[in-house]
Length: 428
Ligand code: HEM
Figure 1 (cartoon, rainbow, N blue to C red):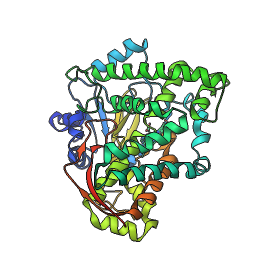
Figure 2 (figure 1 turned 60 degrees about the vertical axis):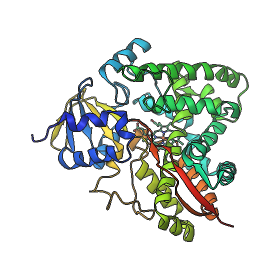
Figure 3 (figure 1 turned 90 degrees about the vertical axis):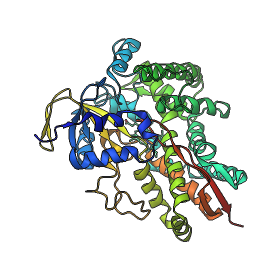
Figure 4 (figure 1 turned 135 degrees about the vertical axis):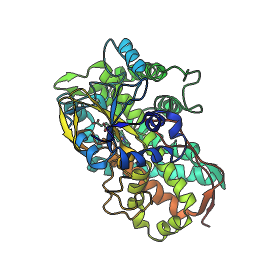
C-alpha cells in the first residue's frame, strides 16, 4: 500500500510540544498529512508506532465505537516509551497516571459518567445562566478597567472559566490560583513559562514525573474535601463526586481523584484557550467585530466556530481491541491510533474554506468536543460561558487590535494562546 509510513522528518515535529508553540506550524504538518498520508503509520524514535488519523470521518468512525477502540488500555495521550514505562512503575502496572472518564472504557465508563452527567445536561446548565452571567459581567468589568491595553490571555481568559467551574465544584476563591497552576503543569508541562518550575525537559520521562506530581497534589488537596463532603454534603460538584456511587459501590480511589482532576483542569483550560483564540481573531479582523456588534444573533455561531478553529484538545490516543479495516488499511488488534482533532476540524472535504473563520458556518459539526461515548461532558457549560462572555463584552467594545505579538503555549496535548496582548476602545 502506498504511503503506509510517514517520513520521520515530517512527523517528528508533530510529536514535539515546541511545534505547537508556533501558531499554525502543526496545521502545516497535518494539512500535508491529510493530503498525502491520511491514515498512515508514524514511527518516531522513542515512541511506539502510531496510526495517525487525520480525517474527520475516520476520527468519528473510531470514536463512535468505544467498545472497539479503547482509551484506557494504553496511555490516553501521546507519550514516549520511557514515559510509559515510568507510568507503570508509579501506578503498580496501570497504563495511565490518571483514571478519569477519558481513560475508562465500557462497561466501566458509563456508570462513572452517570455520576455527573445529570449536572451537565442542557436543562441543568440552562439553570446556571444567571449565576454564570454574573461571573461573566465581573470579568468583563475587570477587563474594561485594565484598558486600554491588557494581556487578554493571562488577565481575562485564564481566569473567567476557572472561576465558573471552581465555583461549581466548590473550591474556595483562595485556591483558584493553585488550581490554575496545577492545570498548566499538567497540560503545558513542556512550556517554559507555564510548565512546572525545575522540570527537566531533556528527560523523555518528564511528562510522567510531572503528571505524577500533579496527581499527588490534587489528591492531597481533595482528600480533606472528600471527607468534608461525605460528612456534610452540599449542593456542589465536590459533593456529587465524593458521594457518587458506581454500581452501588464507592468509586475506586484513583478514578475518584481523577474525576476531580478532569473537572478542575479540562473544565476551564479548554474554554480559556478557545476564548483567547477568539479574541486573537477578533483583534486581527476588525470586520468580524463589526458584524458581531451589528448582529448579536451571530454570537452562538461565533462561539461554535471558535471551538472548531481553536480545537484546544490537539489529540487523544485509542488502541484497537480487534482487527479493523479503515480507509483500505488493516488496523491490527493492539495498534495505537493518534486522533488529531485539530486536523479533523480543518478537513477540507468536510469544512468548506476550512482555513477561513466563519461565524455563520452552517452546518458546523466540528469535533472540537470529540464524538461518541466520550464526547465532552462539559460542552453545554463551555458554550454557555462563551456565549455569555461575548454577549456581555461585545456591546461595550468599540474596537480591538493586537498590541504586540501573541504567543501560543508549547503543548502537543491541550494547547492555546498564552499571550494575547490587545489594545481596545470602549463604547461611551
Ligand atoms: C471549549 C471547551 C472544551 C473543549 C474544546 C473540550 C474538549 C473535549 C474533548 C475533545 C473531549 C473528548 C475526549 C475523548 O475523545 O476521549 C472532552 C471530554 C471531556 N470534557 Fe471537555 N472540553 C471543553 C470544556 C469542558 C468543560 C467546561 C468541562 C467541565 C467539566 C469538560 C469536561 C470534560 C469531561 C469530564 C470529559 C470526559 C468525558 C468522557 O470521557 O466521558 N470539558 N472534552
